[in-house]
Image 1: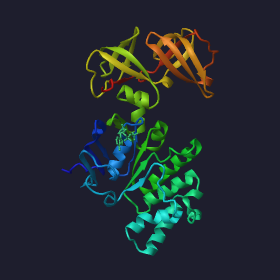
Image 2: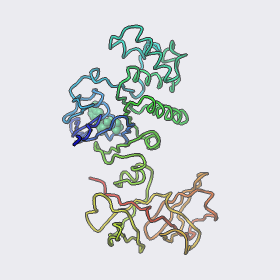
Image 3: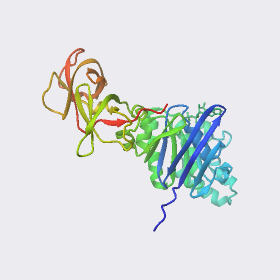
Image 4: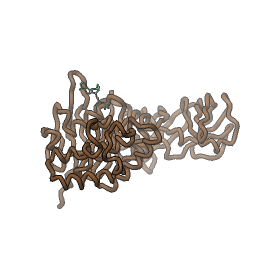
Length: 366
Ligand code: ADP
């Protein structure tokens, strides 16, 4: 029998306390080799503390961190051989671009010709070769970010840690560098661990997302998993926005799905891995999974409920509506071109959704 493979990075029951604050609270997380994992959570949830504990700049109160089977929690940062891109880049202002990138190699006392070769290669990777002799102050934000990246990857570390690497950049540049980071990850084959509070960035760049709240991991999965099958109310609302509908468990279908009653309607949902504790169940229903038709429509989607428009906002390509229904106030997001009728507050509408749209979500831990 083959042994299950040791994960590349394994954080086990890690805690970090600052006085009464539990910055990381008994956290466990495993990351397979070669993934691009993003730690996603609101400000103050413990993302940076976890990243800096992996990097070696924060000493955990308890727990272990194993990298490729080796315990690293007690090692100083320079013995961990990780590439780190810090918030704000932390470039040395008196050194040139080339000297900044050479720094980790100088510390490792590599021979001069080797340093020259590796620095040129790293600068080429981030398309900064022509700017090698400039100082950081003579670079744009995006270029400084690339220098920090080149410095993190110049010694080919198997693990690269990124602390909000794009947060200081404007929106357009951020989009461009997201694509570059993704490409770099594919080309290098290294494992990336990235920190962000930006859900769009997490969804578009990562192969895996770990959602963090109050120093705990609340869900880990692929971007698709996290968005389509949020496990808790917090995840459903932090990644995208959702309608949370209170429902009552009515029974189980022969195919295993749950039948639920809410506002006089019957809804069906996949049974979650952890069955709901009592008859009261919360459902997440994404605004874009609701269709809207004028008046009281009899045909169309598998599930329907009538309501009246309370409010609407035009966003160009999409239109957001708030609709008063027996399920409560529901947010609806519809492609504007699909709305073939003039909107008005108080107007009756029929909302519809596909059978697999509602997802059972657990209440958040206190
Ligand atoms: P995030 O990166 O998700 O914004 P942090 O990991 O920076 O969150 O912080 C987690 C919690 O730990 C916060 O409540 C923060 O105030 C606290 N914290 C972080 N670093 C320190 C520190 N050096 N001293 C005291 N409290 C800290």
